[in-house]
Length: 275
Image 1 (cartoon, rainbow, N blue to C red):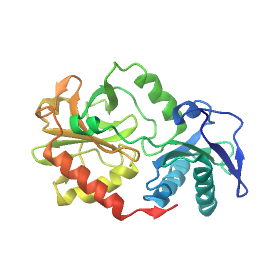
Image 2 (image 1 turned 60 degrees about the horizontal axis):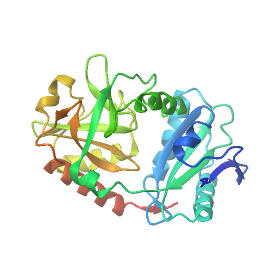
Image 3 (image 1 turned 90 degrees about the vertical axis):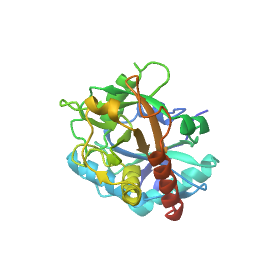
Image 4 (image 1 turned 135 degrees about the vertical axis):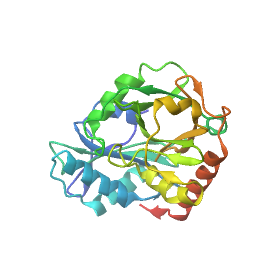
């Protein structure tokens, strides 16, 4: 079944000139530009929506695009598409085309929560040698680049973790990455990775649980990590139990990861707002 895709122009939502059955398929048909992805809670509530829009504007600036968002218009358009969709909750993408930034594209698909067994058992990831030419910008070009890599993953691999030339674990192809080493949360600083919305929330709640050091771990440290995890706006905090076939800790989600996920979810529930 085709998903809702609308082009926002002069305050009105027009149908897109293409169809798709998922956000992933729609990405292959979208023009080049910048984008953000989020989800709704309780049907029509969101978290840090203005930050999503701020990041769109920052990404556009970094990509030398002129952009002045009609924020109220985008909110109205998103609400309208959600109501028309009939979905309980949605995962949405807002894309700003490079050639026509005054015509944002909003795409929706039903939001499917992370399966319970994934959260209870954790996920397996692999390292990948990919380079983002502009890590702080969220570009549609990156969606194409990462798909070429993730399509080669073996069954059961949940995500790829980008590794720098020096062997440092930076971020996921579609997430932010963290590790626990010596009772400290380690993650790359904002100059080296995309500062995800979920990352901001995690780094807000983390200091009350574990010391935070904005320095990435190296691949050589993988055997000595006690825990690892990733975050994204759609998934929240997801435990990692294996990297490149190497078991992390005792091979199951660790105590810091579980406490961070609980704190993350509590923060989100306390900061929900209407679209």
